[in-house]
Image 1: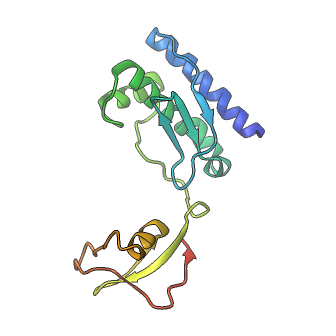
Image 2: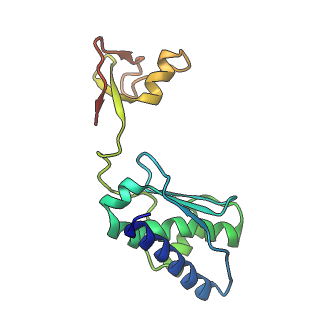
Image 3: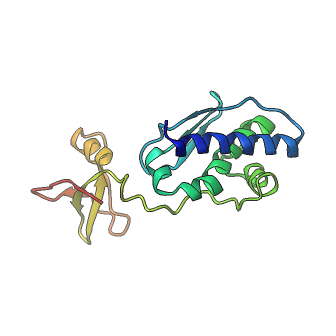
Length: 167
């Protein structure tokens, strides 16, 4: 584990202690892992009381993780502990973000995700070209899905000589 990951663990626990003081309740320390993949900065797993952070996006955006991602994910766990199962970014979560952590209740990050974007495959419809993810491309190949253009509503077809690329 590197020093940045250690700093995130310590900050998560510091935020948890602050939240405990504000809420007048105690909570167990969550399991903290650096196993989140893809374009997601972090995720909270309520049943296992766990937070997963994306190590690639963390390395590229350490200040934003400290300021926004840590409270965001911790707010999910605390909202679940205080209110049970509610909408993921509903009023209870928003209140936790603004009143407990004093952080704007934004639901998504605005990080550059080019380093974590996977391969894409080129498809066409009648009106334009589309970049499909590996998952969607494979579903088409396995005949498990047909995707349509949102504009012209025609089915998407692969471009011949379809070489994968990075976004």
